[in-house]
Length: 320
Image 1 (cartoon, rainbow, N blue to C red):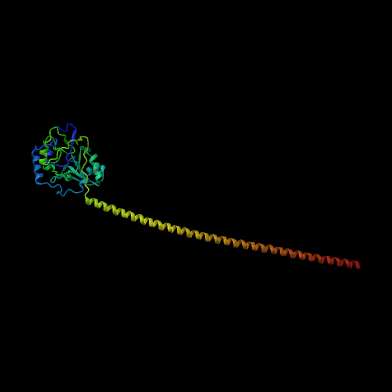
Image 2 (cartoon, one colour):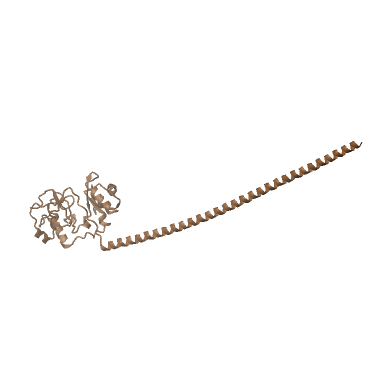
C-alpha cells in the first residue's frame, strides 16, 4: 500500500479528464458523462485554449478569480485586487446574452511577482461577502486543459456528482490502494509522485516562465548593449572630468599668475612711492638745513657789522 499518510496530497501538472474525476488520480475509467464529453474534446482536439479572442495579456502574469458574487462589478474587483499589485487588465466574464456576471474573472498584473503575490495572499479573501478562489491561468498554462463547460475544469460540488480533483482547492489524495501503473501509462495519465507527496497545508507554486535560447540571446544582447552604454558613459564622464580638471588647473595657474603679477606691481608701486617719499623728505630736510645755515651766516655777518659799528662809534667818541 502506498501513501499511508491520509494528509499527503499531490497536484496535477497536466490535465487529463479521467484523472481529474478521480479522488486519488488513479482511476482508469470515467465515472460520469461529463468526463466522457471532456475526454472526447481532448482526444479530438476540439478545444483550443489560445483560440479565444477575448483572452489577452501575459498568462504568466494573470490569475483566475472564481466564486465571485454575481453583484460584484469590475470596479469593486479591481479595487480589491489592487492591494496585491498593479492591475494591468481585468476581464469579468459575463453571459453573452444577459450580460450578467458568470462569477469568475481573469486579472493580469504588471509583473509576474505581483501575480504570485495575489496568488498566495488573495486566495480565500472576501469580496462582497463572498470567499473567492484564486488560481493561476490554467487555461493557457496547464497542458491538456479542458474547461468546465466542456465537462472538464476543476472543482464542482457534491450535489452535482461531478467533482474534479487535482486543483488548488481539491488536490488528489495519496492513493490507499495499489497503483495500476501499466493502465495509467497506456491511457497517458501521469502516475502519482510516490515518495514526493505534499502536505495539505502547502501551497503549490504556479508554473514559471521557461527561458528559451532566443530569450537568453536577447537578454545577453541587452546586457552587452547596456554594458557598452555604461562603459561609454563612464568614459565620456571620465573625459569630461579630465577636461574639467585640466581647465580648473589652467584657471588656477592663470589666477595665480595674475595674482603674483598684481602683487609684484603693488610692491613695485609701494617701493617707488616710498622712494619718492624718502627723496622728498631728504630734499625738504636739506632745504631746511640750507635755510638755517644761511640764516646763521646772515646773523653772524650782522653781528660783525654791529660790532664794527659799535667799535667805530667808540673810537669816534674817544677822539672827541
